[in-house]
Image (cartoon, rainbow, N blue to C red; front, side, top):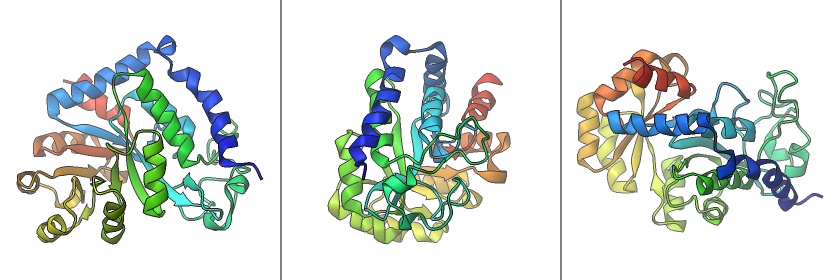
Length: 285
């Protein structure tokens, strides 16, 4: 059986050269400048949902590399555990939607998953794209951060993973300190026991849940349901020195909502359309 280190070594060879200062492109600088400008003008950060670039398949190294060049503060990843206890990036619990495999992913080893294409729906262009191991992903982002003054962090959706190996993996590539962690309240409590300084981000679906969650979890941020957001709620959350993150996804991923987020004082929006956000809030003004 091929070890995880084999896959990591191959990925490192393929991607390291792309992020050296020698290969720093005008497109990369433009993305970084856009991200900086968004924070300077609106105090707003962006997270790329499942690393979405709308160019390459979700939750793959190809889309992560593309969205890094677009310039984002966070890349959201979904972490799951394989049959042989390796951590991988995959949103669904089954393989059917995004790969040419079928069935529950936790019934497969990492080596078996690496035989599948993660480019389903993208024709021949991404046929060779594979489900990435978490460590491949952290290495890619760490290489990017090392080559650039502007840093991109991880927004970790803890789908099916134990706290200990997750913390170890992010710590190995110096991505632990600034990562934010989304999951159930119980998982986040367990994570805090393993890493007390973890930046927890529980969901907030009802305003009346806020006080209890702050007391229980001492969160870094709330993932606030968009439909309950208003300027008053944002201000109330900020009084407790907690940030407001929110998803504008699917039918909510609109130019109107990008603008509304800035007027409410939201700290971060998660989107599938990074470039559209920049075009709306920076280029159209």
